[in-house]
Image (tube, rainbow, N blue to C red):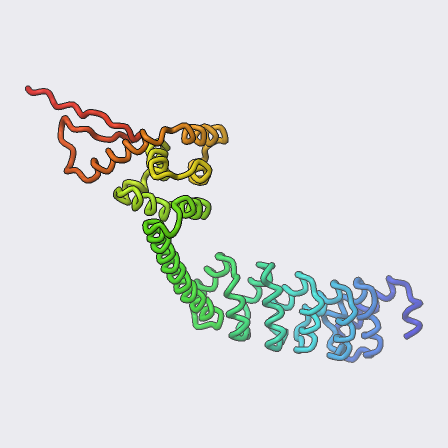
Length: 330
């Protein structure tokens, strides 16, 4: 074999092509060629039936990523070799291993491969095609599949382990979402109750809901403290005019710096400019408290009155009041 080291690269490459698939080639020669530079080793690593597990394991332990990639494309791989490939391989090698349906893997190797697939849709896609994935690995994989790959699994149908894992994941997500909604509902009711019982300041509650981008809960809170219909107040949060919302908050004593959080939330959703936000902050700061209280009281009376008749006062969309003209008699 020392003579082989003295041969030119071109000669070694020709020799590799000659013995690469030959079942009776000398094992020492084939092993030496398989450990050579990649251009010479590639054919032997991929195709030689002479290379056994011991030889392949030794090369896989120290070989380059190109050597590993070639090994991963062999017609069959035992569990020990795939374990080395999964431990040492880059994304391309891992994808090759996952794609090779004749690459046998122990449960722990599957678990490591699935974990490494978390950042690679290509590996995930390759794993979908395997029918030997263990249940635990399938559940872990189902936890982070892209929407596109989830749709692919669903479209394939059948009773695969992965399809079962996705169904289990969907059920868990629905249950978790329902639990979160219920917890959020209870939290909201408790905060509002604490504000009404003066156990929590209105400013703290308003800040919390506005900073959390919870406009629905903010609308309920402001409606409760203002003694106004929830539906009417909720519409004010993102209405085009901010004046009714300003009146409501000012009359209830919401501090200027706290109302700024509401305006910031509105600005994000309404895509207001910085100049518009600054102007709204200044207008709220100069809004008279006494005038806001009078307007709120009128709104309360209006909301509790029967439907408006001709000649009665009615609030407009800016929170002001206008007189509805009586129709002229014919």
